[in-house]
Image (cartoon, rainbow over all chains, first blue to last red; front, side, top):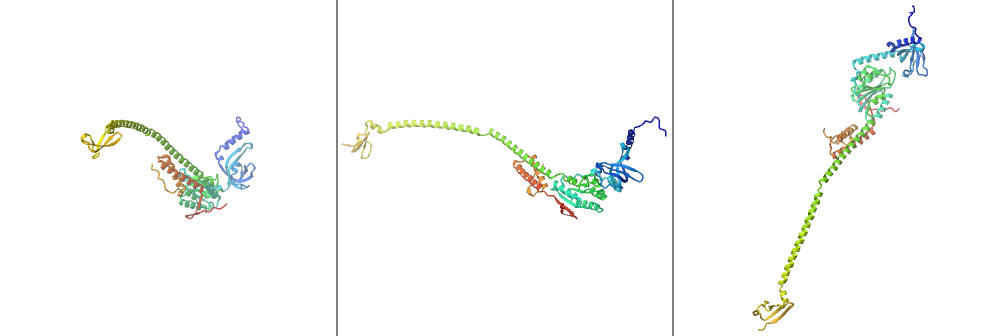
Length: 400
Length: 81
């Protein structure tokens, strides 16, 4: 092949950059599963993992960064047959392409994952995971159903969480194995039996484990039982990064069993305490307000009452009484004076008429002793007679 | 709106939900309606009693854990750690 005279000359950097761009913009190289045997495994202190995947004819340099490496099971070994998922990049300083692996799993897990995806898309197509199927989780359920192993740490974590946050509720445990071949039918039975008790919410949970350990929660029977449960279901299976089909079918997915227990106890004891305190304050406020209102009306009435008080009338009545009694007293005095003047006049006149008064002027009264009759004429004089003068009496004898 | 009937159940016999519901009812009645002073004082006193009863129930609350055994419920004994 003749070089074209006019073709441009690239620097190594320019060419490498073009190759890199070409590879990194190819979608099927950016989301790829590759299987092979591990060799040249190296886990330096940086936490990143370096290895080569190879089969009979080819090899591929791989890197797994620290953040992904931490989530990977530590049993990676030389010679192990694995499946890695990741993207192809170019490391320019060495002119090498390599796989940045996000996930490594033992060969065969890939098959499980395929089954997971198949079941997921089937149930999804049926509408089992649709968001409008999701029901509200009650904020303060009276009873919380729990489906998990009676002996696991998951149960202990959930009970501790519920006890701490909301001991007023009640827990109904439906124990069930959570892994192994007997787990799926037992989980289904537990969900159905719990629903007969009508709990406000059901938690279905187990602690972390490998994809095989969690597999019961991808079982179609279990997923369907979760989907048709009358009580709303919160799933809390494995760790933050584990997703099971139960999570999709549940009304709410919690990253861990503890988180599931928290989501089932949205109203805590502290919230209730606050609510009571708040109600008490409202009680006191309203009664104080009412009392203040009444006090205000009483003051208003008292001041109006003062205006219409009979005190003034009583005052003026007193005055009238005083006036009347003064007039009565003076009328009485006048009357007495008149009367006593009259009495004086009468007694003077009486005095003038007193016969004793005549005697003092030298007259005498003569009476006959025999019959006491007055002697006014000479013819009447006879026998012994009494003569009364101004200062006494004396006897006379009439001589014939 | 119908007048709140003065509920006559002794407060100490009410469970938390009942006591809380009555308390909220009383608060709303006191806030919302024209009540005679005597009636209001009665409501207030009952409200205070309900509030302390609720508080006492909260402090005394102990989580009840039961286990399904067949169709019946039995007390669940937690393993000590």
